[in-house]
Image 1 (cartoon, rainbow, N blue to C red):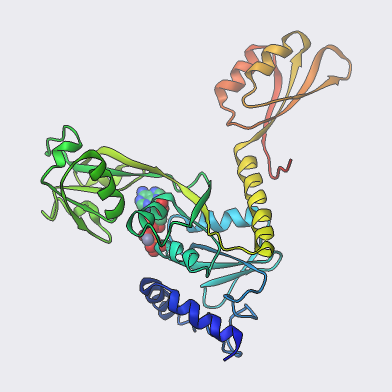
Image 2: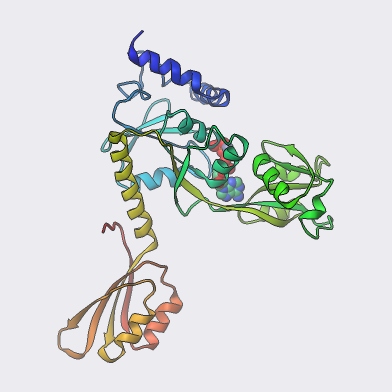
Length: 346
Ligand code: ATP
Ligand code: ZN
């Protein structure tokens, strides 16, 4: 048996049943052949087995859902251009040693735990839930960085008719959730004893159908709760998308990972930063500097033909609101321009 085949066999053996099932489901849906097979005639754009040590970092992203677009967008902003394979399960970056696995978010921790991928992007809620359920298996997965999108909270909600005074009101009640691990830990911590019904989806209908007295689910706007006659009561977790990694990188992959990390950091900083240009009376320079949000050391330049005014340019690492601009104006600034920053590297 060739080395590649042996590795494929071991990796496949290590994959969780769900993961294998999902891949099969996805492949059936797209009519794709197994992208992990070593068939030399495969249409897979990865010329070598993607799981072998080919010096390319593997990242797992959500295939389709709330995090997909932003996750791929983040890599693209980091200058990584992706070409989708025909089976849509794998993307190859053609200007960077990176392969992207597009999978269900629930499977991402398993992809990292089995070292099929070394890096991933998923909701903090999904990672913490897996770690709550299978502490040992996922202990080595590490959250590296919050990415600022996919914000939501895991909350307990109950029908408006439920007299909810505190979490203690859940004693002896039934709660429906897709987050059994996190909910159990929360209730244990609060000393509450309740029955938990695990549901894969449509958790919000459980009280109406008398499956449960309350629910524990992800909330962002709260509109779904309201339209189901539910009221948010306790927040268990504030969550957002995070970059995660395993601790299984050799020095070659580590180097690629660090480069990506530095680019992602730069993208996030640039996204959150604005470049401000304005003209300021010399006399009010200090007052204006004090108003500039999150700016360490602005550049001050003379304005031709004006003894009393200077030009001020600054990178502000915070949002610049209309109220900030109005305050700058009140302090004597004029010609205020606020522009987005495309790229930024220290
Ligand atoms: P998959 O098919 O990949 O399993 P999914 O249906 O489990 O998808 P999505 O609904 O796409 O997952 O949510 C993915 C992540 O988006 C969640 O785990 C969470 O981190 C984040 N998220 C942000 N807002 C919400 C929300 N209102 N409801 C659910 N998830 C949200
Ligand atoms: Zn999911």
